[in-house]
Image (tube, rainbow, N blue to C red; front, side, top):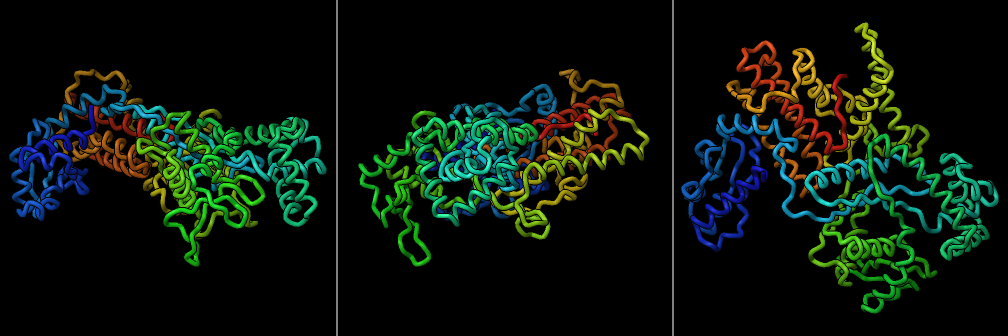
Length: 585
């Protein structure tokens, strides 16, 4: 079944053509979810937008549209607001019918897309020989959620981890390790990743201060690029060591990725530069091969070039990203390519996309999108760092997120004189802690910075993962207390919605398909978070105001169905955010 928004757009488009002619066949019908429930469930803003063109009052246009509109039995008689907005409200009978239907549908009325596309989501992308830090948190979490939503909608999704596994840093590191710890270049796992990072920092210091070391490092890069057997083996060992440490983080966060690092495109770089030269797009600037682009200037107003080959003949990130883009279009047959990186890379990707378009590599049929995100800040509003001023390791951050709820759980169990298994305590602590971190990130508009606070994200009050998890657990508590298997409620159960809180909850549950379809397009997971938070709030109001197990039988079954649909909605929505639910807390 199409989302309600899609159905309404179709119905209003037909009414628009019937009322005013074929010239309006491609006019956006301007249908939105009502911002305030007191005005209804959906709203059409066509009257106001067409007033000038049709030279009629917005209210008159709205009435003409209503006269040509066929909404079936789902809605009350449309109402016209002062500005000419058309407000639509579901009939209670329709709500009852849909709630009964949706409880038996594992997809909760969210149909797969009619046109399956191949979508690449490029996210996470840590650097080899460096530990994942808080800067990788947002890309990893946001990218995974976007991929999950697209997969659920039925697209073919390729989740790519464009790791930094090539370039000068490896010549530098290999050169340093040959002196300081040669065993690491011939033996697997000879070093911990933390020690490898320390060696990397020392190598970088030598590279910046010692010209002889710098020249030797550059020669090591040339040997590596030519696939020198010893250098190549050392590089593979270093990569594998980092990869194992990354996987620990990915396993904790339940992240699935296909690694395709910078080295994958190494053999394609020559062709990128050669093709740009043949197309007449390359210019030499201070010995470097560049493409000058429209709309990019430096502080002095001079044209800002995109360098694709340095003056020393070396390639850079831009060359690799152009090669990757070409490969994804030609070999992967991508229809949509999504890059999830920090907002600071916006200009870089705008330049890459412009070069690809001018070169004819990026057809109009392929959509390329940079999904930017802001910084993770400390509670003081400054960049999140350790007390020593170092970047926070992602592993440390996640371990602390698990430790805090474990401590709180142990205290609660002691106060309640309650005994639980170690497995239960570990599971609850890990789900609550990691879910809190994920949700705190995803619930923010990704384009904004946000302040990282364990206290806020682990709170049972407000728009947090624990609050949503607790709403789900409440439904399971009803099931346990009543000895009722909610998964086996009679499919023919009659749903009767009479109380205000029942109707408000049901109205909201029917909008899940609209929200998922919206996030599929705008790639803003915070919209889904806000929806799930509102569902939890409406459910808690319903729970407080409407007895379930103590209600009369005909109300009891109806309310069990409504509670079960709420739980299914929360579980599905949270899964699209990469968050697991708990049966007990």
